[in-house]
Image (cartoon, rainbow, N blue to C red; front, side, top):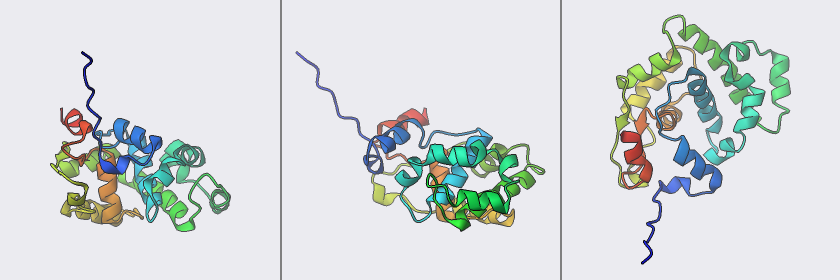
Length: 194
């Protein structure tokens, strides 16, 4: 007798297409400790403000190319001429404030690295080095921001970062695994907890 396969249960937001399913299954919520990838996610979450995440996912490779593979040293040296060129690039979100924010955030990151050994060390100190493990049963329970994202947002802004409001920061924390906000019914919840 053939064995019945149970359907894979995912967080509902991921079911919008293959791009989102792959991102959910392979990346979202996995604790991330690579400085360049952390910086990339911070910039991409800021770029996403007011848009759907799939819009950014589809442009991620173009962002990597346009923003020097998210090398903060290179981005910090972008000139007004570079900004104008980026604003003509259809592969990214052509919003002047968001492009300028990426450059400002690269400069703020370089300044932060004078005080901390890494972006990883700075960020993960906010969660004492371990992911916050939530136990949400429905998408509606998941907050858009928390006291923790408020605190991190405030600290980032004091350090000169922009496009890092509490909601953007919470989405960043979810994406980089600082918090595990997979629903408990999602197959990834237990995988990431172990």
